[in-house]
Length: 462
Image 1 (cartoon, helix red, strand yellow):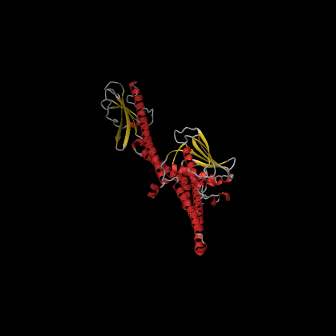
Image 2 (image 1 turned 90 degrees about the vertical axis):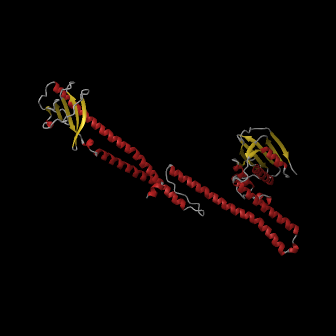
């Protein structure tokens, strides 16, 4: 039970609510008792002093010598007029057979005093007033029995019993309301416990409304959906990778088995060349897979300022392609990034464009609205609109024109996308007048000015 209260959110909320209720109600109860006692006691003193003042006025007028004092306030029923020698010269009916109520005498500098006289367990609130200012003038005593609210602790007991009940009710109500509010959370927890890697299609029940619990359920379901998509992509990637790796291995094995079965008919040069081609393809696929694993990690993440146009020029100078490349490069387009990764992004886009171009490739770099914009286009086959997002998936080939024997591993555009994302940018396949056009947008380095001078060239590297 103690663990439930101390360890559960419901228990902690209930304890906090109970502590808050107690911290408010207990001082309120103490203050209420104090105020109630003060009000009652002030009323007692006021009534006894008023009664004593009225009798004093009557004595000064000579109307009460030796007579019974009439009551103007039935609650103040003990009234006596006493001379300095202690002789009672007038009294009320309730004090008829009583000795002087007290021997206390008002001092010369104060003709009115008030006190509480107690005998056994009975107390009397008493006020004394000298009839005039003369020290030897008679004194009027007016008193009334102290009520139970002042003489006992009944009021305190009642108030604090009520405080205890209210604190208990606050605790119970908080426990009940918190339990109802957290019940959907308990259901979601049980449903999440049933989710496992083999079945990520399960979802938690979403309570109605737009409160925090409903938002939590929506967030959990959204996370589960992303996990399911990620797991599906990982399974598909593993399947595709195993297929892509199996193909060159199977080709290599077939060549070796053929050479083993028919050694006299085997052309060793052709065998070695074919084996090297398959080995090169295996190496290319494995290299691309390792690069994909490193992109976005903390491996090779030394960032520097990279002049994107200069990077393009260096890449074009080192290429030996038959397809002409037309470039339009603005100067001073600087981005922050990993130079090796940005170079690989550029290489992959140019390789892809070269494989699918009919007559030429175009590449441009410019600064636009805080971004460095890199465009690589070719005049080959157009990319269907419905495939412009899917083409960036790993091992995706759209048709026979984009087949394995075209020289790609099926990972080039996937690597380009991951490099762009790792540099807080985006890459997209966009509409082109003819052929395919890929656009990369990367954030400009701080302090980079836009719209530098553009240089245009037409390069062909035979």
